Amino acid sequence: MEPVSLPLDRRLRQEILFARERVYQFGSSTPLERLEIPGDGPEIWVKREDLSPIKAYKWRGACNRMAILTDEEMARGVVTASAGNHAQGVALAARKLGIRAKIYMPRPTPQVKQAAVLHHGAGQVEIHLAGDSYDDAVKAARADESSTGAVYIHAYDDLHVMAGQGTLADEVVLSGRGPFDAAFLQIGGGGMAAGVSTWLKLHWPAIQLIGVEGTGQASMLAALNAGNPVTLDQVDLFCDGTAVRQVGTLPFEICRESLTRIDTVTNAEVSQAIRILWEGLRCISEPAGAMGLAAVLKRRNELIGKRVLVILCGANIDFLQLGLIAQSTASSGLTSRTLRVRIPERPGTMLELLDTCFAGLDIADFQYGKSSDSEAWPVFTIQTSDPSRLANLPSQLKRHGFIWQDLTAAEDILFRAIPLRGDLLHHPAFLRLDFYERPGALHDFLNQRIRGQASICYFNYRHTGERIGRALIGLDFPTASERDSILNAIPNHGDGYRRCEVIDPSTLARIIGPRP
Image (cartoon, rainbow, N blue to C red; front, side):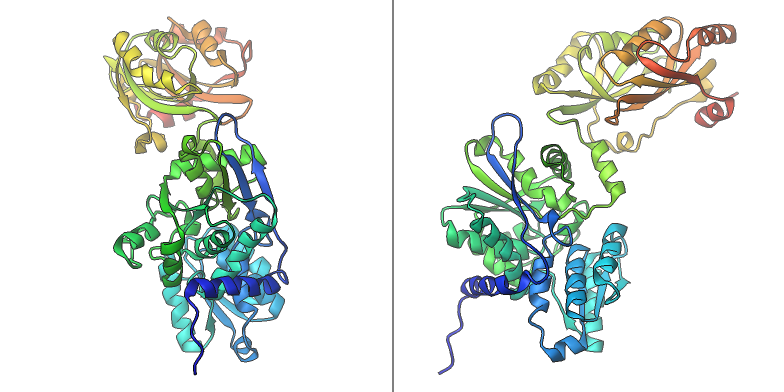
């Protein structure tokens, strides 16, 4: 009689036990750390896969799969497709085992991930850039497999890969920090969610297992709704480590039974979670690595008193992307809103707005360019630790006679497209102001040096988190003599600021363009 085939979930549990004997040839276990955040909420524990050999969890599955290659398969070499982290795992295993590996990556793959692949491969790896998406890279890698006979190492749709990922859950169970009430598991192709959920459910049957996907890349949610894996028309690439158009067949079969539900998170929520991980643990997460925490924060009130697990699954982020994320998120504990406010185009009215409706609020971003002789539409991004103040701001503006628009997340604001009509200016001058980033410093400068003497025709300021704030301020004066007199009277440094400099005429000409 032929042996009875075990169900998939039992085979996976068995392979996780076998993976224990293999993966630690290639790397060590990673810590589980408590994340403290202010206020009421759950007890959050973070599995620090960013501290693994490749700064991501993917080494576990790739190494487990490659450790069982036969001598004949090793001689043929391996090929794979990856957006970055799986490629590093394959490269690590290729170097340790002495196997040649060809790795196909999308052309937009961050340079930090390409460099890491070459570093871990140490001469055993070739990188081939193919197409603009993970799916394009898969097609190229599969074509290579067919033509050369190399062994394809799948990033997630493989029992041994899923089992390797499950070893991180084994470490959580053995840590003694459990049981957990819930675990939030990010999903790309579904391999990690399948392996981890299977192992956690075995040891803690009452645990809630929540899959987490980006709103623009929810392929597991689509598969569960359809009853089988389906292909998304397109995926958002912000969380590039989970940007998969179709989940794997094997992970789907596991997750449809093991997961309690799927939660989705926005890019803004992920960015805020990255900030909180930095502030709480001094660790840097790539966007996909913070998705689990983003889902926890979204349900924070529901989880009060619960013990929850999140996986910081990777830290391979391009430095430039990190800067953009930092710029896009409000300071810790603050909420923000971007408003465009209409005010009469006459001297002093902008300061009146700051003194009334915006008094006591932090201005994180201020954009304005003169485009009309009769009215101005400055744009302010306001931050506060009290959300009710933002909620009450519209009624306060209305009470003072200001018309306003909400431009939170508007594209022209994001790209700082600040209009300015040079033909409406009389005798302009632009100041570069470096002021001490403390409450009142910028306001005091404008109030004491400018109010009633000139009209503000341009303002470009964004909070960067430094001790010094920098603003480019355009002023328009009735006459050239008044302009020169007032500017000459402003010291180069003074109370609340350390640099005030009139920019040179060539820079001024580039800002306002040709004038009549």
